Length: 251
Image (cartoon, rainbow, N blue to C red; front, side):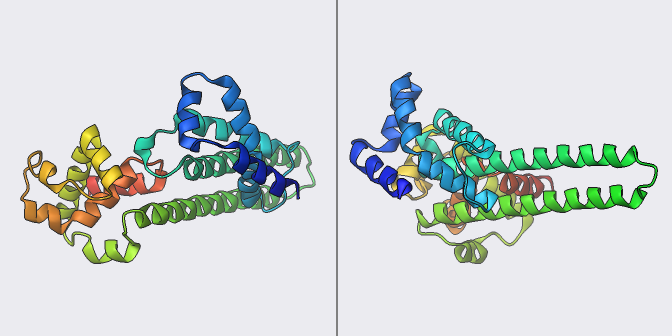
């Protein structure tokens, strides 16, 4: 009930778009920062709870991590990223909470290993099992983060009327063609005017790009969907997808 009331309060009090409030906060409005964080505490708690798989109270350490991450999202958010502040904050909060849990687990295992090492009757195999358990946890958290990236990337693609099926069907077949498309996307991202056109119009500024790259208009049009997808990755906080792009360029 408290969460519902808080959400209703948010809806009534919020007279301007959240992103507009963020701009004012970034310009130094501390009072608005406190109001915004207080209003979105239910969102923070819900996001943290989805990672921890249990209800999170405001007294929990994980909630504090989420609070700090939400504040960080406000500080770092720019409209050029595409998407909304809440989608950006969702990714950042989950990432920070996962990092916190990973660190806590690592410390617990280290403490356990030291305790075991001080007991002559304990088997060395116990330490190995603990290390394997930590490794398993790390793999699981990485999988969770990859899934989160894919989910948010899918939502972002939908804003451009694209899907993963479109990318599979329209991705360049040859390595050199993929590298060229990635380079075109980089040119697009590095030009603020072209990037703004992409994000506002939701379509690739082909005519302008043609004048800036050494490929034909036909090539740009053929790889249009792939170039848009790469540009979205480059302008977002996608760690694993950017690793993939580096692998493509280095291959």
